[in-house]
Image 1 (cartoon, rainbow, N blue to C red):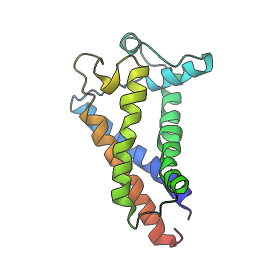
Image 2 (image 1 turned 180 degrees about the vertical axis):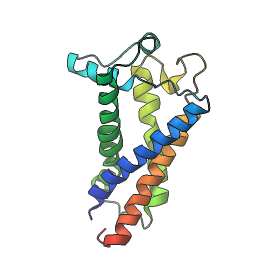
Image 3 (image 1 turned 120 degrees about the vertical axis):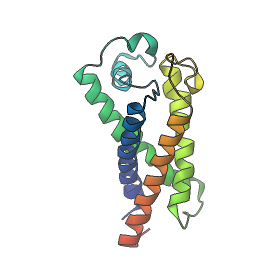
Image 4 (image 1 turned 90 degrees about the horizontal axis):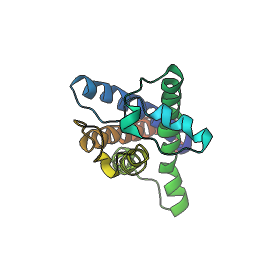
Length: 168
């Protein structure tokens, strides 16, 4: 199976793992300040609105459309499409694919956390690293851990697909 397909699938599976981890952290009282905002943010794109007042928006319950939009965007764009950056980087640079995609996936996951820290949080009005997020939110280590899991799982899926098909 191609590295592109395996990366996309790995990104989807990695996103499932991230969501499970985020629910576990939430159950333990860790708030990463993103709850319910993703769908509302994405729906604003159709009106040319790329920033929201996250502190204000957290006071309004998420609608069903916002929840479904957020899940769809998180999995397809944030999970699968972002994972395509992994093989894209090797293709664009001409570097050989690594012999083992698990450590490379971990590194990719660590790099991908920059999307949360430098795109999402600022667009939600929380500044870089989410430092101006809601009181009591923890915005540094939860995304770092969750994106590391995402990358590890993505790398494991690529490795597993390679072992099964031997095509990469």
